Amino acid sequence: MPKETSVKSLLIVASLCAATAAGAQGSTSVEIEKYRQMIAEGNPAELYEAQGEEIWKKADGPKKASLEQCDLGLGAGVVKGAYAQLPRHFKDTDRVQDLESRLLTCLETQQGFNAQEVVKTPFGKGKKADIVALTAWVSGLSKGMKVNVVPTHAREKEAFALGRKAFYFQAGTHDFACASCHGEDGRRIRLQDLPNITTKEGAAQGWTTWPAYRVSNGQMWSMQHRLNDCFRQQRFPEPVYGSDLTVALSYFMAATSSGAVMATPGIKR
Image 1 (cartoon, rainbow, N blue to C red):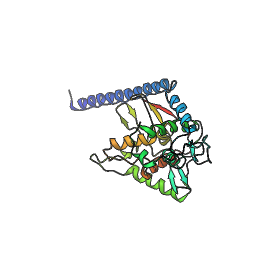
Image 2 (image 1 turned 180 degrees about the horizontal axis):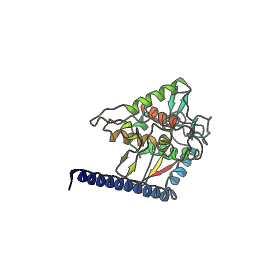
Image 3 (image 1 turned 45 degrees about the vertical axis):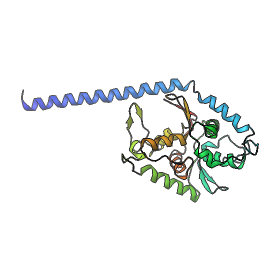
Image 4 (image 1 turned 135 degrees about the vertical axis):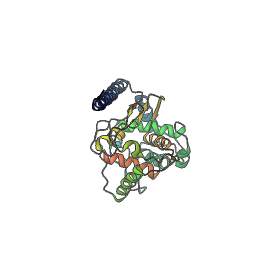
């Protein structure tokens, strides 16, 4: 066989292999999306939403008070639409807070719990488990609303800048950053398509569907839990629950997705 013919044959085979691989990847993505739509019809997150509403209204803690006067940013006790505008700056703490860190503040000020003890509690245990149920309920009352997170206050601008810096920060044994998985289009891990958080569409995929019920382990996860797992996969030290760093990462995602429609609580494989 002439050399030129041999090279052409190899190129044809390579092109066919690439096309087959691309077709397989596309087919897999379509099937996964069908799977997501199917399981979304019976999202167990509804059970957590009901539990969260009960916890919100229940008198608890050393002060024997409910959380019904907790200010989530729209005034004391106003829950509907609050999640769509979080994280945000709160004057009373002079901090940018996400829902979970704000609930920590209310657990302490309204009910008398020790916030630092709650921070140390493992995920899925004690008051931290209650916070997850609360996030499911509160976020559900913003479903269908548009994200409205725009850095206007100086603290919010600082949070956005910190979140962006943390997103691109590379370190650890694998020299990973959040951007290693979520900084470009077309990235995948195993069978999972990874959203490009640097774009509005990708940030919306990453932000507007959390908290979410995870089918693979039968657990409800908040965004703080999701970020904790991302740090683990990057081989980073475990972040402090509700810290300025984790809130800043959430602020970066929320602000980048501003204008997108909330779809919480979500469901994941």
